[in-house]
Amino acid sequence: MGVTTLRENLQKNIAAVKQLLPSEDILTYEFETADGVSCAFVYVDGVVDKQLLGELVAKPLSNMNLQNEGGRYKNTLELIQNLVLPTELKEQKKLEDIGKEILNGNSLLLVDGYPSGVIVDAKSLPMRTITEPPTDVAVRGPREGFIEDIKTNMSLVRKRLKTPALRFETLRVGKQSDTAVAICWLEGTANADVKAEVKQKIQEIQIDSVPDSSYIAAFLTPRKHGIFHSLGKTEKPDVFAAKLSEGRVGILVDGSPIALTAPFLLMEDLQSGEDYFITPFIATIFRFLRLVAVFVAILLPALYLSAQIFKLHLFPLSLTLTIASSVRDIPLSPNLEMFVVLFLLEVLKEASIRMPKYVGMSLSVVGALVLGETAVSAGFLSTPAIIIVAFSGICMYTVPEFVETGSVLRWIFLIVAGSIGPFGIVLLGAFLLYYLVTADAFGTPVLAPFSPLIIHDLRDTVAKYDILRLKERPEVLRTNNRTRIRLPRKTSGQGGRS
Image 1: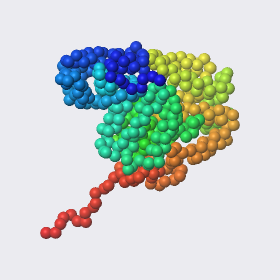
Image 2: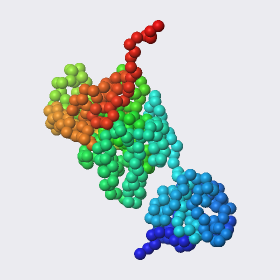
Image 3: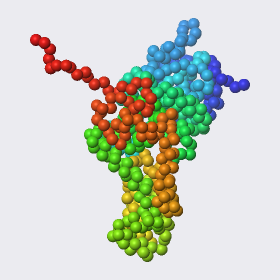
Image 4: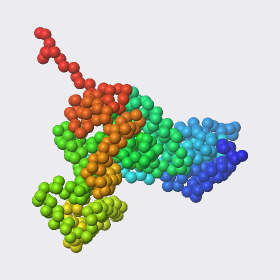
């Protein structure tokens, strides 16, 4: 049976740690104290501030005595705490725990003759600065975004919720990555059942590595093969803090700038953080515009195709003649033509996302002029088909979080419209409505507050009411504390008695 705890011999302790962590980036730095006691640091190269470790720890130790006159060792941890400046110091004996601390970026201090190691926090992990998230740009409101460091993300949330009710509980997930996953909630506000269910599902995750929060979301999703996501996602700390204040439970994953929230309502995709920094009337108009744009993006190609094949008389006569003249010499069938144009749109979208940004402009020119104009001039594609698909693609990006789901739905509706016609579109729409009505996440209906109908919660859906009329938190979240705003009591008169 191997060594599981540290001993009093320094070299044996170093050998035991190196046996546990044999990688070449695990470095050892040895030095001596003023009375000749050998010491050593063990740390991971590249994640430790060596200058901090040397100036604030190694240098003070090299000038101190660890032994009394009788040769007996003093309380090493107490001496170190009194002399060195790093705030986080703790004693550790078990090799397994020591290995985790070193891999997390901490340094291990070993002293010859001392049967324990001292964990010194001198991390210098590489991380990017806090910037505006590229996927959620706001004209008004805060512009900070989460980064890949979970400690920084937790501090950004704490910055906005300065209350002892804000709680964090950190779990470790991943056999190889040992990734930190923090569950966030407001004690006394969040639903305890939702928090317990989220914690239980995370604890049950058995996986080698967790590189991003999407891996955690896959295990928390009730319907594993559903096309609608059942967890909220955001890169903005202000949005995340607002959702916690409503009574939701948040999830932060180390290494991911995308935070998760539960439970999730489908109407959240129509909401933008900017809606709460403009007038309610303008916010309502924008939300209604997004809702219409989503329906146009999903249904317009299917409606055009079904009308062209089955119900051409649904178009006005002048529009019918224009379409007929445009598609007269096209060699492709309406079905195949629409599929080709939509396929080109998806290819251009994927290429523009993954190609270097300096090539993106050239790609746009090639896609618009070469593939678009040239295909029409050559009589390979019709102008109405390109206009329909292009407008559908633009409308889809009014709701960025719905792009993946909307793209899949657009393909499904297009297939049904080309096969069955308008009746197929209606039938598929009814099936999707039934799917959404029966879906729920963490005991909360996804289609709420429309199904089931909750009159109170309609104040912050498509319509955005004034903040003074949102005095209570959403009823569908089943929070423990419904009151959100307490208005001052009205006085009965202008002044007191004389």
